[in-house]
Length: 185
Image (cartoon, rainbow, N blue to C red; front, side, top):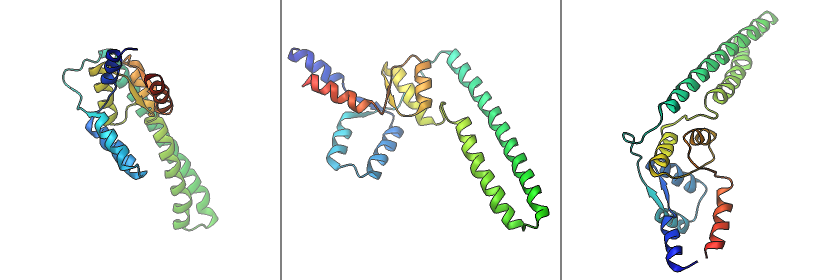
């Protein structure tokens, strides 16, 4: 490969991130004590850009699917809520005649019910969907730039694919970059 072709490739390799996503990234790197020299390289390589939320076009069919998906999830969340209330009420009613005191019933039944409810509710409403503005910003920016998305988030994956964007798993991305750099150098 000639030098001009290599320099074109090199110029095209950068990472664009919405500023809020960059903050999440840098907080994560700080939490896991990433070396300063690595953060300096990341700061140089990562371009922080807010997506153009007003001019980036998304097909209305995608928006329709999203609203329909959220409605189904909300209904499922409501059923989970109702089920949790019934289960905890029945269990409380069973324990009351046995002479258990109110504080023990609350600790046993309600504590467990709340924990179980949160787990089931989170799985029903959040897994596989866009559940934050930063997630949406990532997709909008990728759509605007005609770029791919690298993420570990299942919701970003699902909606990136629906938007026709290239999606790369964050788990396999480092290995892919190592392979690419071996052939580039």
